Length: 582
Image (cartoon, rainbow, N blue to C red; front, side, top):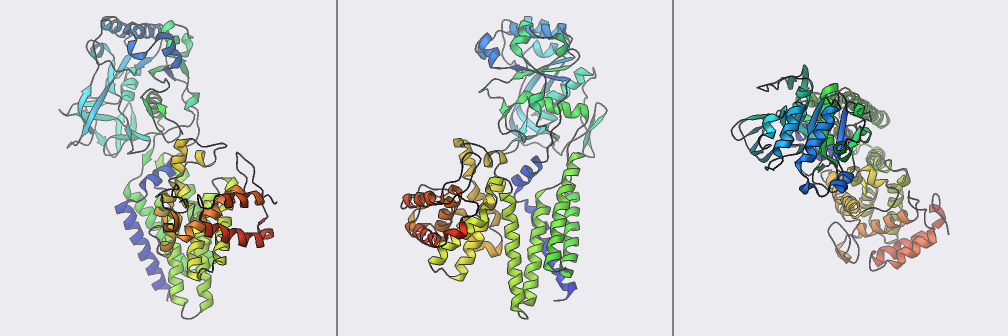
């Protein structure tokens, strides 16, 4: 095949892949997860103080629903006397109380208290802002006497964490409500809230800042993993006046629920556990104060980047050998990772996943083209192309093993063990190839599992196990559309099924489980037992083999265990490196 035709084929493949990514947007959740890994640690602003309604406060003053509003009035009085710059009281007062006048008096005297409202019942609207059917507002006279009111709604991704916050919402009558964070900042700077919020060129111009928002007025929050270092005071201490006034003087004070088990807790990209909503509002205010914004670049920029990568790789690969072609792809791959990180550091979020998937697709397409062009002329070159497949697959598997140094080389060992048992069963060359591919990629789904769970130095919780058990499905989905891995998908999906039917993800039993998956299950369990982990040492090989035999008929297939144990015992010296020997 001529160089020009080769280039056109690769470019055509790249364009088709690009159109698929842009129009279908597969693996969107994984792309968001990859961008979450780019957050870097930085100290939170010392000028934003969290006053938490915490466990100690509830222990002192009793059940939250029984608190008299006089306690909040005392807290506001104490913070006002201490010189707080603005008091954000993230508590929704929607019902009347006999002590409303006392609380209203404290709000009026302070003159800088911001109260929240909440929109409920999101509904379609002709307006770009998120529209709510009902607005829960503070009762009179609390709302009228507050310095400002802003909505405290958050916008979590479906089934995922909070990454965005709506800076503006509307109700069914078209009334516009600014975010709680904006109301706090306008109160701090003694600037009236705008009457209209006009988005121009992707930004809202507020408080002399150009704040980037999307078409629905959502701000992408620039989280910091260091929220634990944010200045904090217990609400009980504020009520009792038992705090240093210098801690709040001229500062933004945000009061919110932080007690264990309360509902106002949210998943965020930088924390393994849920965090109180008041912390999310604090981060948003911090972003706006420091102008540390994140902007998701538009489709046009991502399309231009993809076309550039396809153009470079499509031109270079036909003119280079496998070695230099792979180095070119690796260089482009690494360069784009660095560019994504630098862009993120400068406030721009590039699409992390699609370019990194496009490059292997182009590379694999290049190998396929070269194979098709040369198979008639040279069988030896065909073997080199097949080795190129294996190199690409092993590179993908190595990227998963690299997440945890305790599992380094795991995929290669499991593949070797599975093939050892399969060979003794005299499986065909085609079936051995399918098994080898599945073995190398059997844990590829762990790319979607958080590092904190994979590398946890101890037993996993039931919830963490539920997450771990998703990796066979994730892995099968990742490779499902790759033609030469079509037969390996089932083996990857079912490699954690048990012979007695108590496995996952589908609870298959006995011979309903593909033989290759049964062999992988034995090989995977053996390597796990014979390898060291963060929370335990490796088993002796002799003990690991006995454990396999004890699991016959329950966890493991008798045929698979006997085939592996017999073959392994005859070659035990070959596999002793890195494991405990008998």
